[in-house]
Image 1 (spheres, helix red, strand yellow):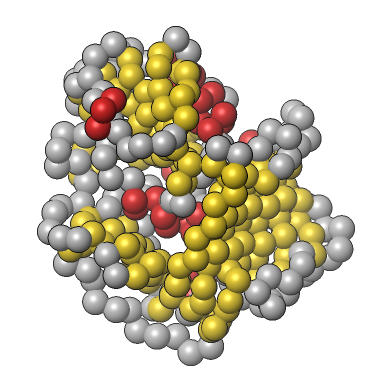
Image 2: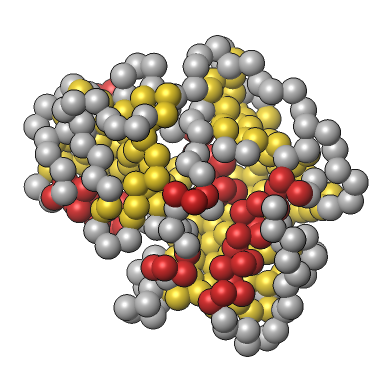
Length: 323
């Protein structure tokens, strides 16, 4: 647990301070209780979409949504509620497996605007090559809790944001942890290596590091990659992609010479593509173009293997986990 205070300076720019602020934010839900309303905004086919969901954090457990459309996270574990009850999500890798955000990004810490009536510091992550801002994270100055996360495209324009529009509680007395959801299925199994016929390059391009390998009950292999700020889950499964079985909407996408389809949804960006008689699905809160770049690099660094997954709802918690 990191217990370091932040000094909010108008032009603070030390990468170490920004790294500490991000680290403090990533562990704040373990230390602090909170509740409120979060608004998700995302650009889809040129139009802005908006959704609001209730969020609570108590005893180190974060709950997002309500009814049959909700997810819960505690520590590294995730659960998703559906019509038939709770489903076990996946377990995130330990923080030590993920590169420091400052390794691949230029970080700047500065005084931020009010978010839901709270004073903030803002960490801006820019591409060190183009100097373009790609991510802004607004953290509560008193508690370190992340109040807003804004994803920017390669032109520095906002394409997705998740942030509090109402804070009912933040800080104060700590609650006890609620009961663990009783999932009907087993959580994905952590793997030391993937089964024969699947590929899991240790690095993709110059940024993304393989930080987790998992095997789901249906035989799907899940890989988790991170560059310190953006995480990408890649699902691999044998069998040709059923194009007629995909959800309606989305946009046509190319991954090298392969045909694909992308979706912008409240939970994140989804890219599905087919290679020979195999398919792959990548899920992240990164932009479609960044996912395409990742997918092409993955294909260049691996053999003929791929995957598809039907349920990506567990990524509704992605923006609150950072990595």
